[in-house]
Amino acid sequence: QVQLVESGGTLVQPGGSLRLSCAASGSIFGIYAMGWYRQAPGKQRELVATITSGGSTNYADSVKGRFTISRDNAKNTVYLQMNSLNPEDTAVYYCNADILKRSGRRTDYWGQGTQVTVSS
Image 1 (cartoon, one colour):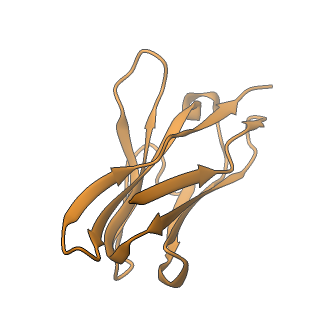
Image 2 (image 1 turned 90 degrees about the horizontal axis):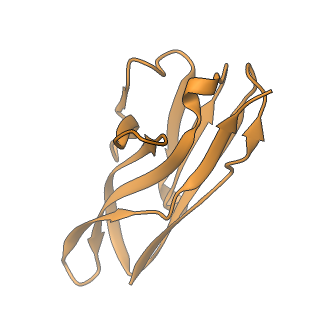
Image 3 (image 1 turned 45 degrees about the vertical axis):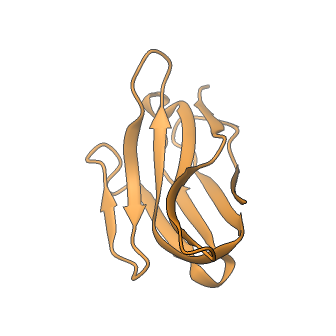
């Protein structure tokens, strides 16, 4: 069994910063790409940022220059540092990971989501 557990979501004022974390646990042999997605009310889930096991990153245009994704492979954890937040960043943020289990099976996993609300 593999679990992704996100943390760090909360209410923050416009212009503020927030750091999200997502830790993977369970029967893990290795983790390929990890990423963050978000879903605002009434909208489809969208890509925020991804990072490969080697550290290559990719960002949505809307967050470039404001958000930074990073990972600690020893801890099976991915982070999302969010700066200069604005109300349009309000959404449930989901962690995603492409995981190779010890059984040899490779599966895509999602976390349960963490709410980020940007409001004064």
